[in-house]
Length: 122
Image (cartoon, rainbow, N blue to C red; front, side):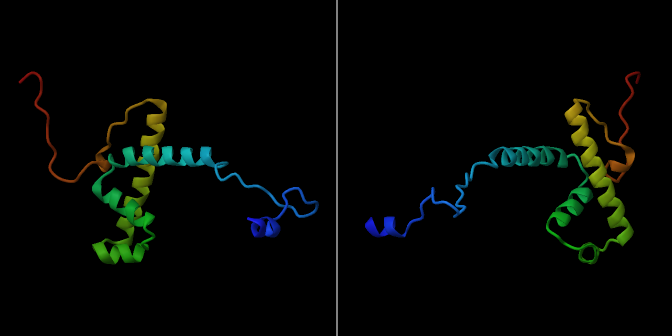
């Protein structure tokens, strides 16, 4: 104990500039970032599988060239899907913030045959 006291620094020593760091000082920022990630996680499920794939690969820092080679996509398709994914995610988050539900647009829905709803008069 005596050796530890002798080798320790005095916090009140003049001119030494020792600062006490509160590791919890950024707690509010951390909480807000986690909240934002949860919001993104909820909304990303509303994107198409291709849009989710592109965003996930961007988060993993997979280059456009690697992605296009791996999934046999053209660079133009990659660009368009990524652009639409970011725009759709921003719109979903903004709408949720404002409390307005969004309906998917034709270009954002899954490819395949259209399913018609039966009319109420039939």
